[in-house]
Image 1 (cartoon, one colour):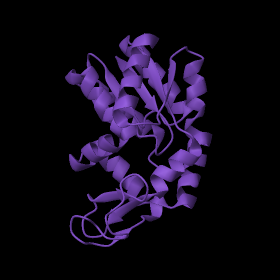
Image 2: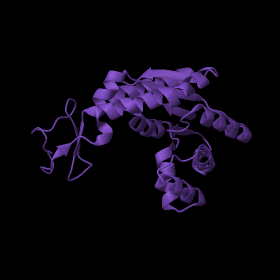
Image 3: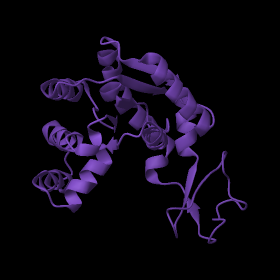
Image 4: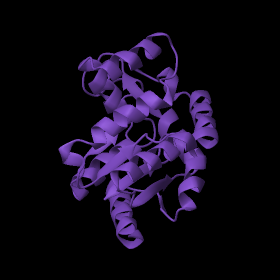
Length: 217
């Protein structure tokens, strides 16, 4: 299957992308991984992307698209792939359509993870990270530490990252609604969108997604 995964920040895209790719036996292709891989390998695209990032600028669509094209041409993606974080806007979606068309292939589904805005804000704004080890993550509601503000594992101080503040989360959601959400309408016009609720236990959401993808084929 060839799938595009969309949803607001905090909907659990990263978690579901990894699980779905494993279940469907297709590679999980995320823009973050594409950037990191190209930059670490010092490819021409990686160097170009890094020059924009170092200057504090957004990486142009054509660079992102070129990276995605290169990754989708790898042997492990011949039988399908799951795109996470790409396309981010309608122009990227149009470019992806053209790219797939030249290869004689097409998308099978666009999986839309839907989550209420207040729930998304609660999920992200409630995160607390250990200053000593950022791998130690807690949540004030869903997985609180035994002692408020103290890491269970090492006793380090727990804090809220700037990116996790409610104000920042709502700004990120506004960007999503403005820039990324329109691609759902774009793909819905092609009959590709499958929408599921992203609320509930992780296993349930994965099962819901797999069933929806199966039914949508």
